[in-house]
Length: 157
Length: 287
Image (cartoon, rainbow over all chains, first blue to last red; front, top):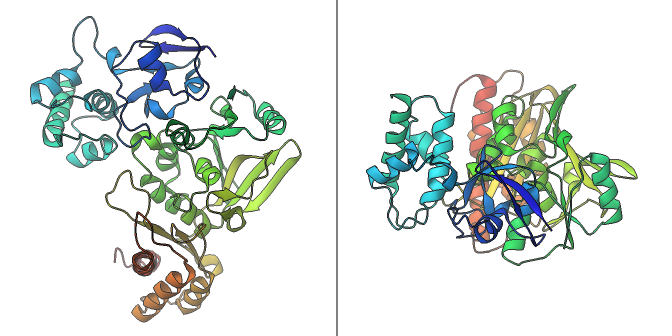
């Protein structure tokens, strides 16, 4: 089947999509957007987190057909004009990237937390918001630093 | 595989009548796992996302009618005061991303004995609104679960909504797992006080082939509690309540836990949650 999705503000169409295929597969394998990562394929790891109509979801658990006509923002869509988003910059500066595999999902999820929280979220809020994103390098302390840094920058310009 | 995309509820029912083997998909947090891991391949997916009316909830008299497309995230944000037990259980579901997609009706459709929504639905005495082109069928929650991952839905039926009595007293949910997030319950328990009827509701999760109530424990403790005088909970009665709750379970040993651990932890959770609820009811504050 053909699936039409707005991805990062651009109308895209994927052809020959298998009906049981996930949005993640369509993004990575058909639309050339490998930012969202394929790891557990069961919603456990959060590495494939993308925005679906403004809500962060695991792209591996959205059937491709369910994304028909909807807006998807992937990690590739956060930077604008070659300039990194605040959250991306903070991850780089805080050293929150080790192997990097979990990073795109964490950045989208952290981005959503920061967008929806006035001020700098408390550590408990950050931990709760990121509870579904696994970092197998266990670099969580730097990730918390990055989220605090990004939130502080956003809210205290 | 076919992908069916009804836009209205009537179309959804028509599709399901025509293709009873189609698997309804809402949040996809169970259905897609099965497909991704190749544990099963449905003949067709029936996408209920476009049916907008399913994403609404309403208060109808003393009942809250939660449409089958209402996500856990929204239930937590909007229904906490009316359905505290279910909201507590919802907070323990998966992760934010999972709660953004998953629904109570999806939990019911999957009918896993470990589903987090089941114990509070049992403790509250919820009703499942099942519908087909033949009409609406009202299924009391305790009759809904028929076996491991099996429910009372007929092949042409879809869950339209779940009707849950608004809380009239304190409600608590408790769950055993290895961490707070992304945990399939080792076992779980919910209690609801119904002071108007001098009744206590219970729900046991992940400790029998289906979620189930503990009727003997409910009757015992309802008679023991000093509803009028609101005197403190007798520790011996609380202990006995826990024992009776464990007695109602029929757990197995599996990868998440052993049967005897499940029985023990159920007794502890039942005693504790009853204590919290009773303290709220008597105005004594947290236990």
